[in-house]
Length: 383
Ligand code: MG
Image 1 (tube, rainbow, N blue to C red):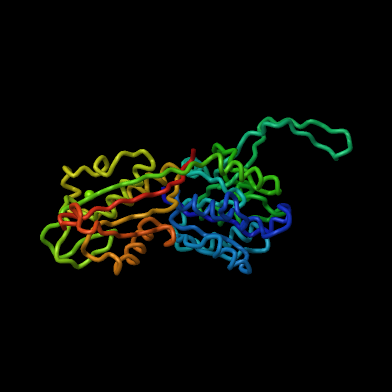
Image 2 (image 1 turned 90 degrees about the horizontal axis):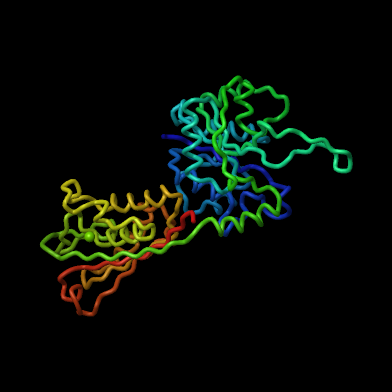
């Protein structure tokens, strides 16, 4: 389902202790805000607005360096004004498009939660991921006699909360308190909207206090695994004028022969990604016997492999491709290849490597019979 996202990253987070505002602080080596931005982009957000303090543009740029697909909107004096600033920044999106409003302080957002709130929105005007309260609830001053409050029908509301954009805009326009709303569902509820609950996720906890960050460090490490994949491919030289390597067309006095465009670099890389997630090989997904792949541009195969990684909540960490041939000379084209791969994979350039070697005249690449390519990738996925 097509949707857009707003991430509210405006607070100063003073309860998290001294230091930078908490949205810029690292959680398992990555700025807290970046976790949510990557999660919503990987879940397929068509547009994503990050609402932050205009004074913090440098922190924002550093936190999201190398990531595309998001835009900035200036934060307001209150959370409610910040959300409305984000809604205004989505004016070019369809008015009835679902919008997910998410707090940057909840970094461990999964594609499953995104899918579940979007699905529940089909029959509601607002959706809140929430968990039942499990602890016994007490009310009272710290040193005074306590009373016990029933926890029946009490929920801990989380984000992302889902609404149709026009419905949330109308509810904010009508909001007149009392006080400041602490989430968006409250605004739609007050406006008579039907808000329902979707399953929450314990990992979506809000990081508020210093001890929350310490727990998040442990969870982040325990909940993700790094996987390695490797791929190899070779194609035979034949008559032609252009050869495709790593998604770049190079003028040459021969071409590589194959069913598709014979881009051995992209094929090795696709196999490496499939290998990292145990999804077989390129031939399983795109059989060479299938006429629809005749002459196909191999970036389609690579994108498919990346989509499979994202579908399981994973991210590519880095890729490293080696091309093995005597000719053509690869070096003049290496930077263009890296940039093309970075664009296809949506990775920063420093996580994409293309190398080349000859075999000093030995073997089939050395005799000019064919070109070989190998690739290694690292992928991080939920454990
Ligand atoms: Mg091949």
